[in-house]
Amino acid sequence: MFLIRNEILERDQCAKSFNSKDPGYVKRPGDLGHHKDKEDLLLNIDLNSSSEWTGNWSQLCPTCKIIRPVRSKHCPTCKRCVEQFDHHCPWISNCVGKRNKRDFFVFLCFAFLSSFLSAAVAIQRIWTAKPVLHTEETWIHYVAVQHPGVVAFLLLDMITLLAATILTTSQASQIARNITTNELANAIRYGYLRGPDGRFRNPYNYGWQKNCADFFIHGYTNDEEIAWPPLQQVASSLMMGK
Image (cartoon, rainbow, N blue to C red):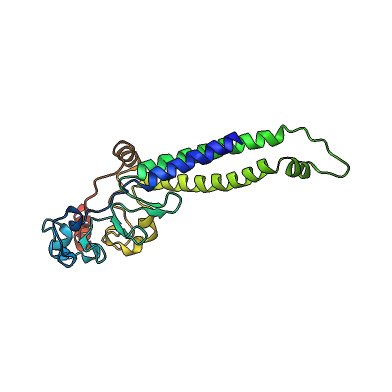
């Protein structure tokens, strides 16, 4: 019971700390106190933004009334645009984005380890129990009757362990490829994830070694909008190479 109480308290404390952390909210002009009229926010367009000059209006957020950076997305739950938006996690009741994804991954690793160790302790407790079996009573029935708390905890912990394993594995794979959950789910909608031939291509994948190094050292990558060369230019280059 002491182990169960400690695990619940630790996870609850971690979730509370994540709940209050900025995941990478895109600053709005109104947040800086420079504008009083919300309708004027659209007029304050950064002329240095590449999206303004190329006409990439898909980066315009009609809710926040800003031109958001590439790889960002508006979260309907938080009602804010988040840089390098990954997903909104109900587990921590917050978005996972540019400024908290590394912490979220560490949290997942600790959740996996704590769930694994807790399950191991529970299994060891059940396995070492010395049953006094009555006639026609099975060992499983004895354990369920004599140790219902341990059995219930083990079942719940196995569910948590499975979820933590899936999340940790998927996040590790995405970190190695420098891509987000949102980008994988909506790749067909994002032009910057398609090469000149129309096929999926991630311009931010610099190889798993650099991707992982940037992620664990800095916590995020400073991504800029990358324009693919026209298909005709690629074809000409290939022809000249021949």
